[in-house]
Amino acid sequence: MATTTQTIGTLSAENKTFYERALLKRLVPNLVFAKYGQKKPVPAHEGGTVSFRRFGALAAATTALTEGVTPDGSNLSITTVTATPAQYGDFVQISDKLDLVGIDPVLTETAELLGEAAALTVDTLVRNVVCAGTNVQYAGGRTSRNAVTAADVISAAEVRRAVRTLRSANAKPIDGGFFIGIVSPGVAADLMADTLWQDVSKYNGGEAILRGEIGKLCGVRFVESTNVPANANTSNVTVYSCMIIGRDAYGVVDVEHGATPHLIVKPFGSGGTTDPLDQRATAGYKLYMTAVRLQESAMIRLECAARA
Image (cartoon, rainbow, N blue to C red):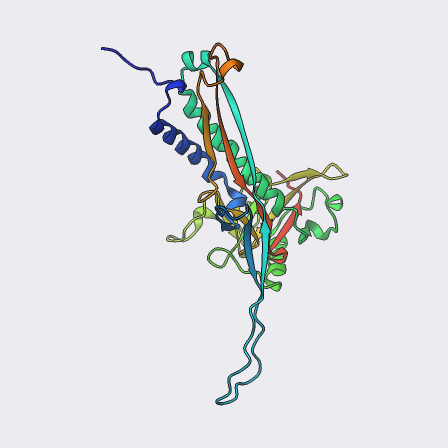
């Protein structure tokens, strides 16, 4: 009975779909910063730009109505913010020897690794935009990153102050009346040591848990991420840039619907004269995205040190 070995060189459409699903399986859970932005799909044949709308608040109507008289009414204030997506991507080479003698399914694992890399790319691109905002709070009442000391760690008081700043600016919560906080593992450990901390394992039954959620404090539901920026200041103290985010603070291209990374496989024998012995295949991803800050007052960057 003859058998056929499926290799990269004989990749079927069905298997390509499987590998793309493997990529997405690793990508979606790691989209931490991208998850909480206002989503927009990539428009087709519209000049390559994405438009986000920001609505201004309406003033209070403090003048009593006169019977039978129609009031003047108010006009909507709409600000359009446009952004231009760009392409990003990477690939890896797979040798014919690795494909022949490898114990593990090489392309499956490669697709999963590419999914993680694509997620890190998207998350970092969004993070860099979001964390460059101008609404900043330094722990310990410091006035700059360089002034932060090792003792200036996060606490309930710091979170409460950040939430006060957001609420004073009329920033709207995202989920169930809560703002979203994105923190590093070290900062998360400091939060968990606070006596007011509510661990996610102790929530009352029936409450939906966010992916990656670790707990809540002072009106903020916290999500842990290893992709939070960390920079050493002039005193060699590592300062973490944690974000506390309200609704529609920033916009991102919808990676899950409209800008999904594509898996691109070039099989053995596709290289022509540049690969005369059919020794190399490649697998890679390409995506198309952008991010833009929409309302500075709807998010705040809390910079602090960490004990852990």
